[in-house]
Image 1 (cartoon, one colour):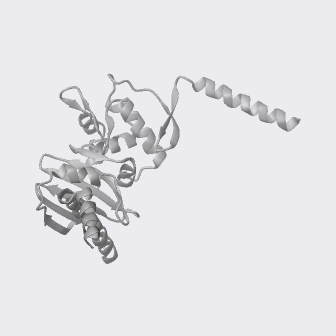
Image 2: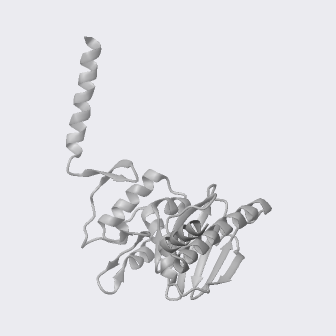
Image 3: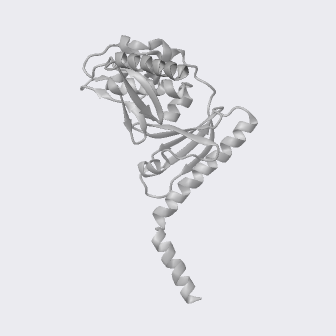
Length: 251
């Protein structure tokens, strides 16, 4: 009986503390992570001082025009814990600085000329300059696409896909083309697929011999997927099935 009384007493204390916090915090779920975060932001009024450390890191990553990064991609690029990133993205969405697209998270324009990048630059100008440039990239593959197909069609199919030990990060869309990014499962190297006009270039910053072999295997897996897309464009699946059926009847 004494034990039951103590448990009930502790439960009453917890409930009382939660009641005090009600109206100041809300529960959020991002990628299955349940968290509590304070709502102190307004869609119309905010300043650089409202941003937290992880918030500015995320904005710095998304600062490049056309950048779209998945939740896992941001984690891998910035090395932020899953729960911390969930809170940061929730805050930025509440502030109207970041929005989620089909390709991942991206900056959201505020008004006609003011963008989240302006806030990011004011809040965290030192972070962008302090990020190490990393290892140089070397080219693995370069090829010409002989099929009349829009690069956006290939990009749409490749978004979010994993190849071998390569994990999807995100993409950057610019006026000249697309850059799709993957990283190794251990984060030791990265692979970029650049699509510019009718050309495809795959590059990596793998440093060791082992990493380069893994990067080459992964890059060929990506290239194989692209050739399948092109084949499907030239020979529709139903036409292939019809052809096989005709051959079977003739035999």
